[in-house]
Amino acid sequence: MKKKQFETEVIHGGYNTEDYHDSLVPPLFQTSTFTFSNAKQGERRFAGEEEGFIYSRLGNPTVKILEERLAILEGAEKALAFGSGMAAVSAVLFSLVKSGDHILCSKGVYGCTFGLLQLMEEKFNIQHDFSLMETEENVQNALRPNTACIYIETPINPTMKLVDLQMVAKVAREKGIPVVVDNTFCSPYLQKPIELGCDVVIHSATKYICGHGDVVAGLVAGSEDFLNKVARTTQKDIGGIISPFDAWLLLRGLKTLPVRMDRHCENAEKLAKALAAHPAVEQVIYPGDPSNQDYHIAVKQMRKPGGLISFTIKGSKEDAQTFMDRLKLIKIAVSLGDAETLIQHPATMTHSVVPKDDRTEMGISDTMLRLSVGLEAWEDIWQDLKQGLDKA
Ligand SMILES: *Cc1c(COP(=O)(O)O)cnc(C)c1O
Image (cartoon, rainbow, N blue to C red; front, side, top):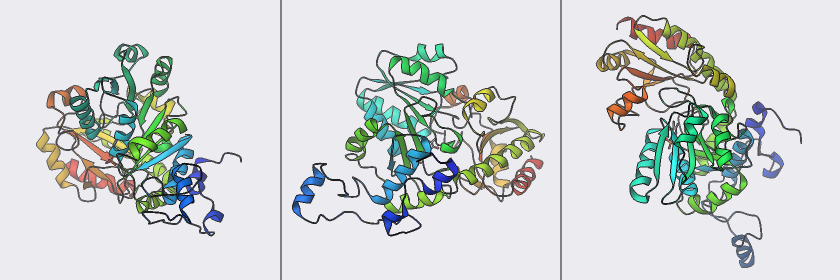
């Protein structure tokens, strides 16, 4: 069958109505277990000699449709769903590395991923380093003989720095080291790491993939070999699986992903320009800004520059907080990718666990704010930002 466009696959991928009593929408299989028609059938299913479901931690039809749809969207052989983004991150990392190994990370990862890396170091002697990964040499020099995986976020939260995925994948391939990309900030609509030569893609599906702020979930896409191993080990036995209902909600959210992302990106572009022109704003960091140092990477690997903007305002930490308190339409909350525009203060919220010196080195100042641009009319979002800034 001819490959369909992304906008079609988000709606139809991985699902045939005829297989499910002609139900237009994938049914919700809200069940913990599946019955065998006789003892021998149970034996065959456990032995892997017969297809079929056994127990929902090992597989569920609603979840399977979601997994097949994501695999298509990421251009991967297979995908697996998890109960949170962090369940996905930990299942992948614990599957790839063992005691004594080393992980090379982009300089800046999600706060709880940072916490997980520390736990792995303290409890299991798995070391890690952070690198800006700005050049091939940069990456090569940061690799160690025991580096078992390269772990990348791009754009990096909240500094919005980008990593050239094709460049890192090339270096990694020469050494046979798998590259894992947390693609949460982009969704597969904006960036496809596997097509750029990377090996594993992770999503906090809580964000753009759900898009409606009502689910916490994770997804992983990659090769059949690797994901079969994850399914048999760190997914099945650690057990961070998704609930069928949450999978059903994600299937519903996914249908509008391209439409939503287009609007998120369009709004963000307008707001980034308006913010940059306001006298109370010191700096705007947005990958779609042609004067941004990583703009060439954005053009190369992202369909559009995304729906997140970081900016610093003139003044102190208290001025930043006072500004947030003046906002009315925009909600103060962590998370991102929702219909509602959200603002958060990384220094005291998502990155408060990072020591201040490390934060400063990463470029996270006390006056930096991160805006997850929602789907409201951009004029209304701007009016709210403007009234807050005008008083600053
Ligand atoms: C939110 C987030 C996570 C963690 O996902 P949960 O669904 O909250 O467990 C991981 N990576 C990034 C980039 C995120 O934004």
